[in-house]
Image (cartoon, rainbow, N blue to C red; front, side):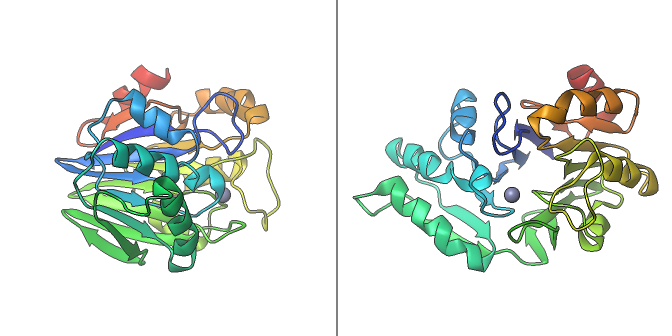
Amino acid sequence: MQIDVIGSGSAFATQANTSAMMVTENDQCWLIDCGPTIPRALWQRALPVNTVDVIYFTHIHPDHCAGLAALLNQWNSFGRDKPLTIICQPEQQEMLESLVTLAVWPKMALCFELHWCPTLPSMHWGAWTIQTAPTRHEVSNLAIRISSGDRTLFYSGDGRPTAESIALMENADIAFQECAAFAALPDDDSHGDLPQCAQLSNTLNLAHLCVYHCWDEYIDDIKNFCAAQPCLHVSQDGLTLDLTRDITPQLERQLG
Ligand SMILES: [Zn+2]
């Protein structure tokens, strides 16, 4: 399983792309979330239009889905001919469908098949076992755990960890957790914070916890703190990891 951090920034980040990740194994490729700056970040990679099989949406805040119209428009314009599956929460599908409509308006037709699948607590896709669980967020957000063989990735989407999402982080080879703030936020807040992430890193004995989606004003403080923590990292755009190999040197080489 290989991951490519397409974006690591918060909703209004001035430098980083909005948060999204591509997960690939053999010829199977998932895009997790698609905020407004994600299409261009994908185009910069010059990927064939048939590369992505599935787009998984953690939730539909604009910084996680507003790029869908532009991305589908590009795939439609350049002749994608492979079916696409979009996995989302059923109550959020209608809003995403409006972005699909915008992608092809006024023609009203994609040149490839589009399949909608509801997010389930447990799913299988090829060799992957996928589990999802809610975080605490302003809109319903489902964190995702992807396991292939003995390798496991956790990605929170947005939101403060819950008992259910923390259970999905356990024993992950690498976990990505939204961490908006440097200082502790109230327990009933809808975002993660660094003190809680540091505590989770310790109590769960996580090999690697990458925080992301940090608000711009806190990034320097969060980086300084994480620099002294061997298991805590700040994710960044363009980080690529091969989970079938030792992750530690890959992180050291790319994040310093
Ligand atoms: Zn959000």
